[in-house]
Length: 261
Image 1: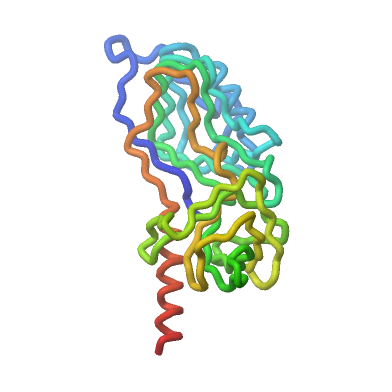
Image 2 (image 1 turned 90 degrees about the vertical axis):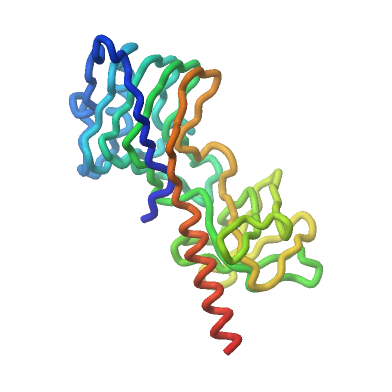
């Protein structure tokens, strides 16, 4: 499993002169780390219990969140002057389905928030909303493309994608070759192990051996989403998807070297 989206380390101090109004522990509301149970509703109860000036506290370990058919995982809407201290915990999101476009979820969502501080937590997804692979075949007019995906990104027939972008052997996006957004999600046909064939609405500048990343969901599968909010800032974030890109790129380059020899 790959840690997808971010450690947030913010050195913010809330209500420094008088201390925190109250410490609200998620465990008090029934959310416990490492129990392999869905902690989403219990964490939400803890968030709802927080008043302006409070601090929400986790304990180290893994808290599991299951997407229950709604794009909102944990709602911060309407909250103000709230610090969320993860204390090194991981929030692990389950339920994203690469054949169901409606299965995406945010981890945190806030509307109408003011002064939200979040730090010392990792957000992970059991299945990332993207996959990386390598073009293994194209049609003569470049409208049909077959992509073999890295084993770390399992795919099945009818996998949907909303974007396709080429990248170079250093793991850097290379939109000059291909940078396509599809108004209607494309469905892939399984034509071999970890290999999907896509019919594109128009020709793409892709050749065999080109490295590509496809995004199953462009918008919505986010760690944090804030709308109409003020002074709610995430700083010092560290994201790991590029490590997967680099891994795939290195494997592809090694394969090319073996073929060349």
